[in-house]
Image 1 (cartoon, rainbow, N blue to C red):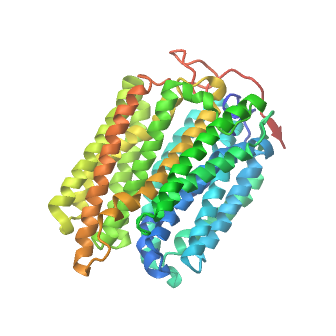
Image 2: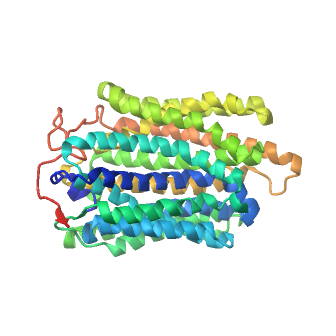
Image 3: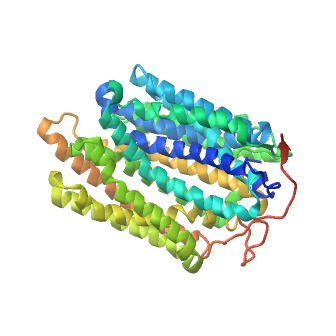
Length: 511
């Protein structure tokens, strides 16, 4: 089982009075991870200028984190089951803090890339334990309130990351340029480590399955073989070995499927529960999550490059420009879950896909109309439209995907959803070299740089709009009305979902 599978199907023990302190600690860790993803994009020009990073190194500073995070999520959850969720959380937050220090003190771009990959790996140990700790600590009737708070944290992280990155870069504290965007994690991580040891209660799954090391290795190998050529291809003029590697990645994934089938027959502990893909809504949902991750990976990176390299804006201005988008995402996400999805079901998600596509097309039109003279205020409208569309998707999508999944596999399904979203994001970052840099000439005069970035931005956004249209079509395979569940009870429609279930066995609590 994954870290969520057993715990999702078990009730919480008697309420621990320390649970709110534990919640604050794990929410802070989740917030730190969210901010660390978005804070880096805004500082990319400063990193490239001060550290002398190449285009491919810049991509790996972002893609390396996403790749390591994606490859390690399921493994991190399984290790929490086996060795204890509190223990893995503390290992993860401690490692994340050390990796942040290595990023902040990196002496060259290669060290920064390696440290970011380590940081992503540590986040993969830390983040899967958050949901499990919440379920092990809070009684069922309080969990709705808790997950509402997590929604607010996601919105706050989306707003805070770009702004914090812009401010820290602009201030140039102690002449450290971009380095404080990583060093700020140190006091937060140390506090989380100390307080987590005191206030988080340990829990283990009663019958944790073995860790599928071969499956872990195959997933990581396949992803690297696919993403590395995409990231370096444009820079290296698309060598033959790149195509061979990408085709080889498909072979590796085919071997993974065959091995996981065999692993299921032998001991019932595969890394990937393949039977889930027989559920139509889940298979469609995995496709939606993957493709949506690709769209977001492309957009957020090229958006930053467009504003700072193409338009020549300072980091603070670029960060402030994104505030309307983040506010729209948070507001729409809350509205979709509480008001719209219970009434309109799948149509809300599909409306979100079309709305986001419309916002992207509006952005392309404004970018072409105003060119290099476009202002932050003129960008606000398309960003708000895009933010509303994204908010209608991100909040209710997980429930929609899980609503027809058999109860005994709900935890595995949750882990897979998070993993493929991160994989999609890493793939999108890799594709930036194709859909963005691939449209520019090799040698540009100074006067040609700005217009070239603007044109490349418009081209990349055209791909994002096409992807959102594909997502709209994929969503027809989702259930018309996702199950609205309550802990420990069947939904009104009798549909099994990712967090309901009969009591099977109490989690083993370790003092």
